[in-house]
Image (cartoon, rainbow, N blue to C red; front, side):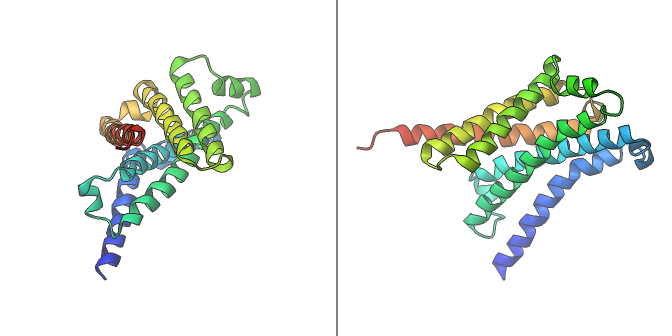
Length: 214
């Protein structure tokens, strides 16, 4: 019974943390303005997928780290791993969808404009594109490479590098996240906590693995 209560609590906490940036985004302007045209619909869809994906990936990285205070609210150790896996998987899906949805909005105007948006020379958007490519490589590695210790090391290194490009993109991109300070602080703060914790834990873990046994 106690395990079931903790399981419900962890799901509730995860849902609330994921929903928080969506609520802040929705409160910025009327829904009617978000869906006033097909251009705005695709823009809104692209912004939402970015917020949801970034939150999920940040939480996935945080749940991968075995902090005592995180473990304290979990029903069992495997729950952390399950949340890490599914949040990471869906987070990557949403993040990969983000630039594609934004590019679609330009198609009625010009296919060239849509292609220029995806394969941009703007350094901020280029950082997002690099992150997208690295995440797709990480997904490919997950599906088709034998899962050895070297595999997981490569996979996590790809994620961490792509995460740095995402953070750069978030810091300097011109979007709703730059106009809403609470939303900006929430997304960047959660990303920084999750990414830094994950990087430190993985660095220590891999160094420990490389130490010769006595």
